[in-house]
Length: 626
Image 1 (cartoon, helix red, strand yellow):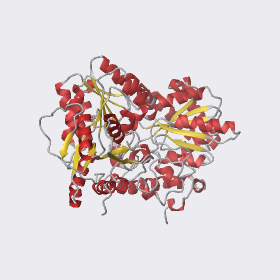
Image 2 (cartoon, helix red, strand yellow):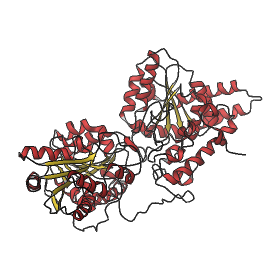
Image 3 (cartoon, helix red, strand yellow):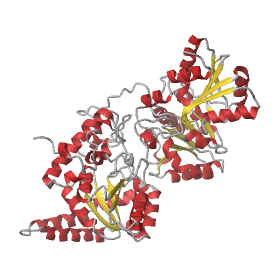
Image 4 (tube, helix red, strand yellow):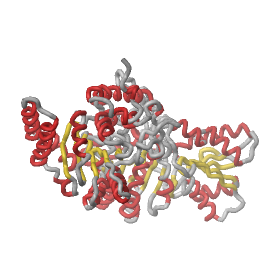
C-alpha cells in the first residue's frame, strides 16, 4: 500500500478522507518534512508543530476561497505540501525553488506574503474588510504564535478589529516559544492557562461523563464541548483578548486532530471576532527537535538519525565572536547591558544572559520597544548594546532616529546578518541598512573585514559617547588568528592594504578579502590596484579617499548593500564635495531589487560579489579586453 500523501495534490483531496486516514497523513507529512529538511536545512521545529493544525484548517475551511494567513511564515511547510507544492518541496529555500515562506506569486493558497513577525492579524483584518466591502462571505483566518503575540503590531491590529463590525478568526498557536523561549507578562499569562490544575480537572471530568453516557452522538459531544469552552472561560478568562473585542475559546490540544476539526467546524459559522487558543509542541514527532527546538528552529542540514549538524564548525562565526567579546568587555565595565528582541540564541547572547542575568534583557518580538528602551538605559548611565538582525532593525527606524540619534545617546547597534543572508530570501536579506543608516546624523557606522577588526570595532564603539552601529555578515569569519589585546580604532580612519597606481578599490566589510585577491589577479593583466579597507562607512576618511582619487583618477567602490544610497554613493558625494574633476567612479553593489533566495555562495556569484566577479567588473571599468 502506497502513501496517502502520494494521492494528495490539493486541500480538496484531503476533504475526501476519513479521520483515521488524516492521522496517518499527518505522520506521513512529518516524515516528508524531516526527510527533506535534513538535506536542505530549514525551519523544522515550527513546521512540525503545526501539522495537525494545517490539516484541520484545510479540511474544514474551503481554501483558497477561505483565506488563511500564516504569521512569520516559517511554520508553513505542511501547508505548502498540502497545496500543490509536494513535488517541488525538495527545492524549498533553494535557488529557483519554492520559498520557505508564504509568497503570493507562488500560489493562490498563499493569500498574503509573510516573513517578519506579528503581521498576520493586520493582514487578516484588511482581507476581512475587503471581503465585506465586496459583499463576499468567505472566512478569514490568521494563525499567530504566542511569540509573535509579543509584538505590538498584533495588539494594534486586535484593538482595531475590536471596533470593526466584521467576522475574523484568529488562531493563537501557543507553543511557549518564538525562536528563543518567550518572555513577558503575556507569556506568563498563557502559561497559567496551560497549567491550570482546575482547568485540567474540569476537562477530565467532562470527558469522563461523556464517555460513560450510552450511545453518545455527535450532537451530545458538541454540547459538551460547548460547555467545556464556557467552563474554561469562567475559570481562566481571556481577559486581554476579551478587552480587545475577541471571544476567547480554548486552550485546546493542537495535536488532537479530531478536536481541531470539531472546533473549526463550529467556529467557522460564528459571528464576530473569535480567538481560538491551541497548545502545540515545537518539533513534534522528531525527538531531537522536541528536545532542542531552538537549534531546530532554522536548522542547517543534519543527520536525521542523530540530529547532528553536517556543517563544519572550525572557524567561529561573527555572531560567536560578538557574544564572546561582549562578555569580555562586560566583565570590565559593569555599565554594559545587552538587549535583544526574542533572538537570544540567534544573536549570540545566550552565554551573556547566563553570566550577567541582571544585565541582559530580552524584550520579546518588539524591536521598536527594544530601541527606545535602550535609549532610556543610556540616559540612565548604562552602555546598552542592541543585538539585532539587519532586516529586523528596519522595524525600528523611527526609534533609532528620534530616540537614540536625535538625543545623541551612547547606544551600540550590533547588526547581525548584514548583506546577503541566503535561503530565507528577500524578507531576510540585510541589504538596505547602509542606505538607511547613512542618512542619520550623529551615528557612527562601521563594518569589519575580519574577526580581529570586529573586536576592535566593538571596543571602539563602546568607548564612544554617542550612537554607533556595526554591521557584520552571517556565517563564519575569515579564520584569522585572534589577538589577545583588543585595540581601538581612530574614528573615521581607513586602512590602505595595498598601494597601486592605476585604480583604487575602496571597499568595506566582508568584501575586503575578495578585493585583495582581485587586486592580485589584476596584476596578471599589468594593472596596479590600490586596495582600501574603509572600515568606517560614516564618517568616511575624506583626506585619504580624496588623496587616492587625485592620484589614480579611477575609483571603484564595492559593497554588499544596494547601490542606491549606499557606500558607493557616500564616496561619490565625498569626491564631489572635494571638487575633484575628471575622475572615473564605478559603484559595484547589489541591484535595486529584492534579492531572491539561494545559498549565499550562489547569490554572491550571480551578483558579482566574488573575487572573480570583482575582477571582471574592474577590467570592464578599465575597458581591458580579456
